[in-house]
Length: 149
Image 1: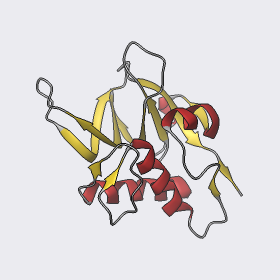
Image 2: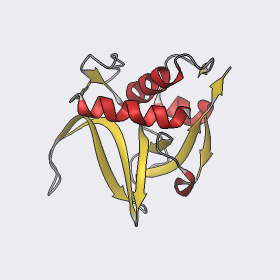
Image 3: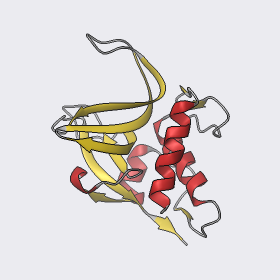
Image 4: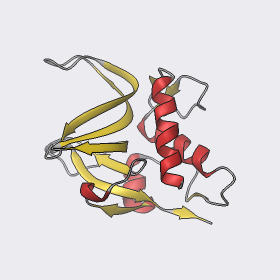
């Protein structure tokens, strides 16, 4: 399935020590992508040879949320589906991640970001697998990418 291939490419980006760069959409062998660039590239790789394509070749996380995804509860996500995120006290979508798995009260995802060390949390720069509690207010919605044939 396409979504399973998307997840496989997200793992490849993570294993390649990919760095975060705002606006970045470098191919897999390059080193810089941002959150939406990671999602777009993973889907483009997964869709090769299938006859399907993304609705747009370049989309922000907010655009995908508003125009290119079917929104679903986090409980319905499969590895490779989308997680839309934002600041805790805002409804705005400012970040997107690829769902990895849920274990108990914890949701794991692969994303590209750059964050300074904060309390017990180490700094992050690039594509990593991270996790938050299912009830974390940064989670806004799950999503299934819409495709065209």
